[in-house]
Image (cartoon, rainbow, N blue to C red; front, side):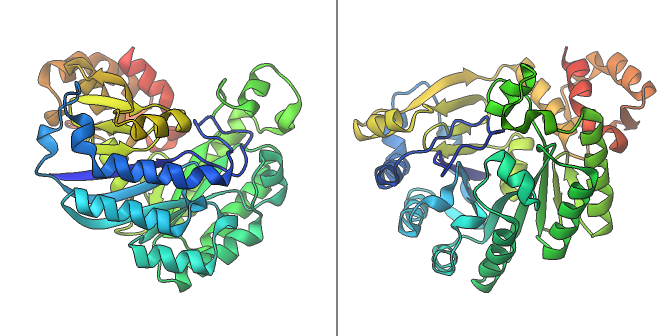
Length: 387
């Protein structure tokens, strides 16, 4: 069985207006102690988990085939820190890395960094592009500009990193149908191997979200496109990316042939992964847990020899079945009801029939998938199925 490892780097240069992640802006002096703590957590993970209410016995014979550095902005760390963390993984786990991903902001990339990343074993970089419109980037609090994306993509390819993923966000302030089409066209011109497109999330977790909920005017909230405009933009992206040869394999993700995100597939398939760093999540097949989100608390815990895990939640049989449905339907291939517990699958038959009649899902035999033209309102399907 293969295992994925996720490394959380919760630091950013600035906090984007739409961000609802547990990340923060701290002095760069905090980077080295944090990286050393992550390295220590990895190197001594067996001791940290000894005596904890989290069993790792079923992971003992696994092979680590994917590593993912996410955040935050992992590319802010010195390349030597990233290399040391990878070395710790290689020494602590049986590894056969097929995919080693680094999330990076375009303005943080230099030729020296790119060369060091490639030499350390990184073979995939995920860009927080978000938009090719400088107006939208400025309004969102992003540090980079369109020209930084073009420059950094060339730098990475010159360093030998040939697997690039670009993120775009539907619904940024000042986004128009024309600016969105332009972002799609510019992305296609740069020809990344992988594309992620996310809908703007409106919740209390971000400054922009709170402003939208309260009908305020800060952070260009009045310039956020309507829900219908966002749905149209998402549907346009589906068509443009398909024409450019990208396979739509998960609600928010497209890839060129054989370039799907191996690591992220583990999440959607409920395969095991271990997370290291502040706020990192883990799953061993029957329990989910997360480390403390505060980076200072995390470093203190590791330096004191204490496991920083919190939010430990055993996954019940009912929760596991619901996850199989929810995560399975996020994938464009859908779910095979023959692989779902028969009693649970049977309990959903009436709901499946209703959703099929409404045109929200498609069913052929025991294969159930979301209707392609309804992907932008997938949450409605999930709520109905799991209510």
